[in-house]
Image 1 (cartoon, helix red, strand yellow):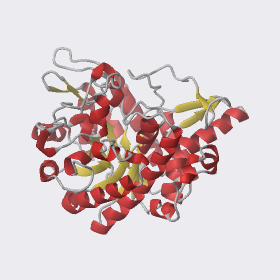
Image 2 (cartoon, helix red, strand yellow):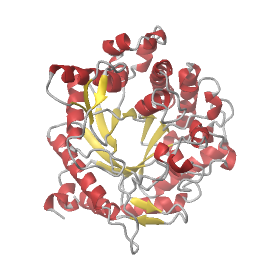
Image 3 (tube, one colour):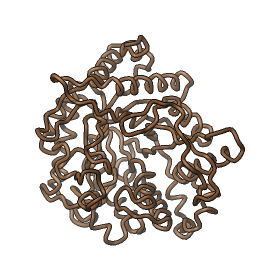
Image 4 (cartoon, helix red, strand yellow):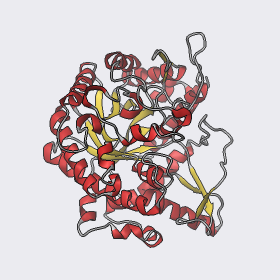
Amino acid sequence: MSPDRSPQKLAHRFPEDFIFGVATASYQIEGAAHADGRKPSIWDAFSHMPGRVKGGDTGDAACDHYNRLEADLDLMAGLGVEAYRFSLAWPRIFPDGIGEINEKGFEFYDRLLDGLKSRGIKAFATLYHWDLPLALMGRGGWTDRDTASAFAQYAGTVTRRLGDRLDTIVTFNEPWCSVYLGHLMGVHAPGERSVEAAMAALHVTNLAHGLGVQAIRAERPDIPVGIVLNAMSVMAATDAVTDRKAAERANDFNNGVFFGPVFEGVYPPSVLEGCRDLALHIKHGDLDTIRQPLDFWGLNYYTPMRVSADPSAAFPHVATASAVKPEKTDIGWEIEPLGLSHVVRDLYGRYKLPKFYITENGAADNTDVENGAVSDTMRLDYISSHLAVAADLIAENYPLKGYFAWSLMDNFEWAEGYSMRFGLVHVDYETQARTVKQSGYWYRDLVVAHAAG
């Protein structure tokens, strides 16, 4: 291992109060899809449709975390992590999206939070990581304004019941994915391919965020609230003016439609012009509601977005440009750690932003178990090189306060099913056996060295 990959050396580059954690999401790990009053989400329905998910995989069992909670909490404690970023399953708490509360759902999260507390692990909760109750889809899902109000009710209820044990609350995880992958590209639930649907979902999601923040603050003004955005590190393919302008449009379409309303109360003019449907959904006062002061935001970063101009394409009139670096993860994503610093510098140059956490970062490395061990050196190199960039950003005075590795364990990787492994811990889906990987031990050594000071 080269010296700059030394967990001890890297640990000392981070401030004493920096938080190292791991992240997961409810539908990806919990399983128990029909247990204790939970009703289906849009992902239950989507994954059961033929041809939607690789191998016909579903989240019915996933990592069976719902039934293996204590063992998984012990696993986390064994890695020494200081914080756990998880999401709550809306359909466990309000099986129909609104109306009657399911106490059994809350009991599971009570056990989770009490288990974290007893192990000294901070609880970073996400309210929405894509598992919309299916009952709400029948009324239009994220294209229906009433869903924003339903989300606010859910947010307030969760905060009232669990807020005494939460360290932070996030409204949405990666709305880019639920809006664009779900409504424009059709590769995520609910599987729509319509710019009209995407623009409706975009605005309703932003509105739900604002209403959700208000609901959380009404219950517990003391809990730090934020949003997690997978901001694209947009890079022009060449220095040609056409490509640079294409990158600006791509920035507006992928980043500006969230950062603009949330932090400035405005949508990018280019998107309002290029996607006329968007304006139809904006009512008086909406942008004031969306622009709630936030205590922090989360950045999920994996790979850069390289673009070139393509006048024949729909707005933002761009084409995907070739990767520059030859190294790729097993899902095919270009490995470019400098994309992380590129997007952070760009965003802080454009917007007045609060402190932030890297709430997801990691690699699909499908190395299997051999003689009881997993030598996932590509993932280890990926995480260490990105953490080195994170340390550089702190040295440049960017207000980065923590890092969450994606993911604690291998899990249901959405449209890729179980074919892609992102975990620090290997999961054998036949037996549900957990095996800590080389990257997991390395991360534990980093956290231990950091805690030792």
